[in-house]
Length: 334
Image (cartoon, rainbow, N blue to C red; front, side, top):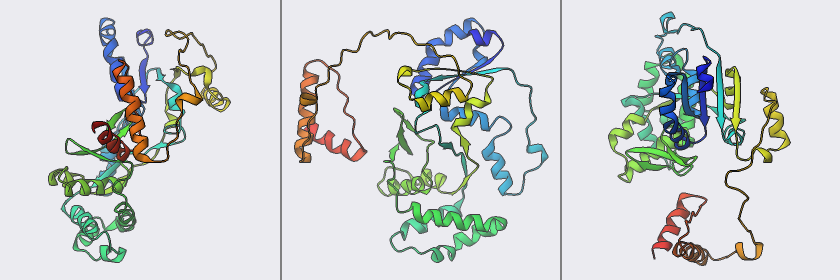
């Protein structure tokens, strides 16, 4: 609010959609009272990437226009005068983790029509014996090349990627929810995250299982076109000022501290926790158990969980993947 009152555009980013929306809702009345709501934006890190890359025009629409040869000077957005801006990073240590810092945000679009659906359907149906040249001989492929003759090499390279993607439709544990394929990410379900053609063929897989409608499948089945790669590390450099908060500031490594300094962050302040001293007492002898048999492992987990639950304590069980979640859930029910 203070920064907005001083004429700045304020952008608050967080890795979690839930936390970002919760914080915005908690303070929206304050922003309204000071009449600064339009100057303050809350978003996830990936949504901030969307905001930045689309400032001068929708990058996906512009890519589609470029592919179809319809791009002209009127498609280019005019530059507008910028105000000073400040980036507030919540949980800054997560931003510098493996999922963001050093990685890229890769927005994409699709060539999507009846021919792309038939092409992908042919590959899916014949996935156990399919050959590259067989795909190039299909009417669907020839129709696509005829529509985009300048981009034949690009389309051929995408066919190669399709033949890889068709072998891994269950990559990263996709889930069918609300007639869409989603992936668990940072405590919530993402329906915008995609893993190339692995996600495309996840739609075919769940359609075969009856969890995805044909309409949803056809709307998604297209040739993937990557519009570019946007470095997460470049986000802070787009702002006049940078601030951040973290509950683990005192535990940052020397490398992380060096990275912070490279962005001009030179002042660091720490404050004691409002929760007081940690009460957790960890015992290697009593709190760690290794069991060779999986059934006995599930049994031990459920017994410990029920004992804590019966004592009135909350229990969170973290599993490595969806398969273990299902098996553990069945063991818990029985």
